[in-house]
Length: 512
Image 1 (cartoon, rainbow, N blue to C red):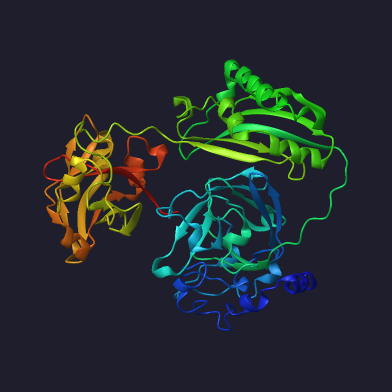
Image 2: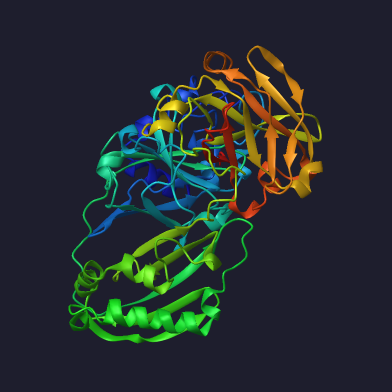
């Protein structure tokens, strides 16, 4: 096995770069100033502290709708030569951890304005199955940017030989190819994180060579249309309804078999269907790989997906909290993967019919919910109030709101029935670092938890960076478990001025 490990080391074009992370003393952190080097966090990077790595040559395939790159992962006991490596004085036992999150270094310019912490224009699969949607993240002080996918949750030898594929979509994407995405092209760097965010073995590699010519032989594949439930959301069982099955069959026949350029490329099949639970499936064979590619480029997959799931401007209510997918089963034969998120509808919040809900104030609440220790048994879940540098303009009321310089209150959409699960509310700021306890004014009909009488000015918020923190007993979960829709995994908030004419409303989420 050590000879195999040496052979893989020879393949890695960036071995010299990886070597700089190797730490001769296994009792100290891997590098200095970790926030300036990918993955821009304090974690153990050296491969010698882990059993996981990526094969240094990836595989890329181009399609009319985008580009897919696949990485193969390795598990090797002999790679872990520093099992006792510590991080900031603690032992994270990285050689014994699982593989939870994929993260790759990307160009900052690939993340559009306001795109940090938001879904990226891409899809991903792991072990051939669709993952959650990839997200982009910008790091502070211009350090860099990353794209990440969580919830992979593989462990030990089961990781060996598995494959992660990232499909960069052309539509509305400033970086639809790996060449544009990677900041050190033709080199790429990726990290394989554990669930505790302490271990991040970094693999470096090179852009793959073009694939060899494919022989002209028939190829078989299946296409599945299915739903994936969000956290806490029950399965949709969309195709358990015979009407939905019949509609999916009709959509397939109209948009796939009915396309004038498709039939000539089909060798057999694609006209019998399996329909049950969350999945509608159809299988067949193309005349050749080239014929399969021609069909993939000819079919309007977005329209087909929308028709199968009856998606209009909004999703059917039964699909709220689901993500709908279409995916091929054979990477080498007419592969396509696409999805659409069926978000929950806007909540009945705030209880205000006349205020302006767009981002018109100079105040806003941060996109990310953070946590801090409250006691041995409880945790603060905190929303940061910040300055909105570019408030929305247009219209007389917006002009009025743009000039407001004092924040009256912030309301949060929380379940009144769970109000006793909140131990306390504390306001932290630079001038009151130990915090100030305040009470909640509840509005039962609208599930509004109101933090009132703030009277914070623009200059004070800018100088003191205040946080509104809810103390919750750990046995009751987190702040998202106390919302009226826990499965949505969002905390809705609304900020008000003293006139109650301005109430910008959005949602925040915890950082993965």
